[in-house]
Image 1 (tube, rainbow, N blue to C red):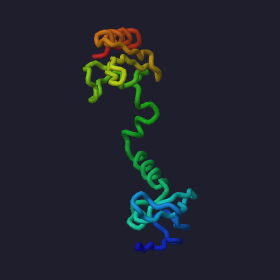
Image 2 (tube, rainbow, N blue to C red):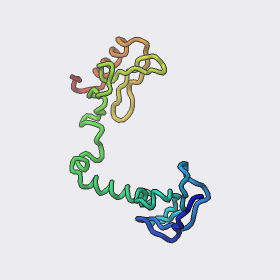
Image 3 (cartoon, helix red, strand yellow):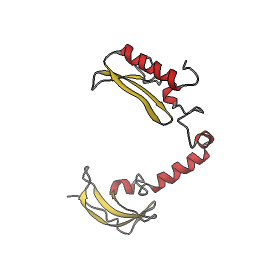
Image 4 (cartoon, rainbow, N blue to C red):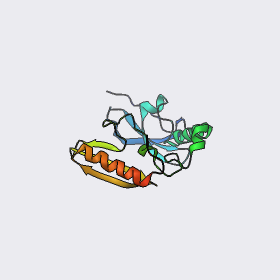
Length: 155
């Protein structure tokens, strides 16, 4: 026999418990209908409420994240267009990422299709997005697109 702690009219962080929810959590815990200070209604696990794991509908996290971003000078300086350089070229098209397995920027292998993919993004749209079974052809397509669209050659 389990004991359910009545949490109605109790406040946990920004959440006010208004009633017990009909369903139980996957772990068997009682769940509660709550109203956040911002006005949003959510259903929360009683254990999470009592132990401070759930303190709001998500608005608290968003506010804290927003405040942290405003204090981060690098984030503020790059806000607006952080993914492109002054020529309008996506940084992902200029630098080899740490997950790159082919060794060539803009050339990857699609395991589902079992083919190589050559890609190049310029001014926010793909100007090259081509699949080929041959690695050398994918590299050639990528280099031709770079010569066509880039002012400065890629290292």
